[in-house]
Image (cartoon, rainbow, N blue to C red; front, side, top):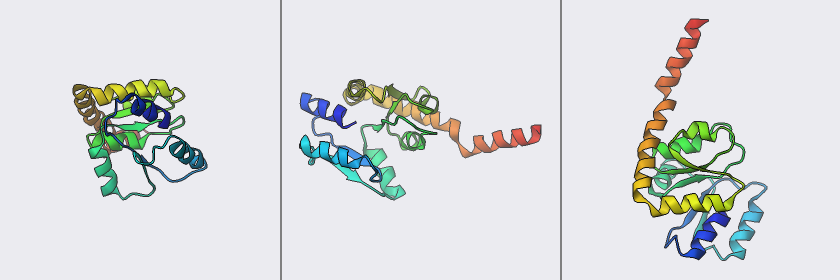
Length: 160
């Protein structure tokens, strides 16, 4: 993610767009912070650890896109959270994410920062694409509603 962001920043394609990272500090964070210091990204890359739901919804709602560059993801709940907040999604094509995203996200190989940069460039540059991703994201979230889940569980229960 940082490599893709830095590539676009250096090309001048991002204007004043900042990168906001929301995650707990894990074993890999030292490398990330080193990269941020090495590339002098401290003024445009911001990190938050634990944010409350209201703040998270505000971050989703004000973002040009939500990016999930995960290589291993069981469900991808953050993708659905972003979509439900009207945020366009750019997601890796790993594990369950393509199924969860359906046709409502731009996908990329999580090992290919160039592919991610290309997808970010598309979403930053094309307002119509962003609006279409938001529309498709809302429709995609309907597949995961509590009502739909409860109905499916009830149908299975009655079939036993």
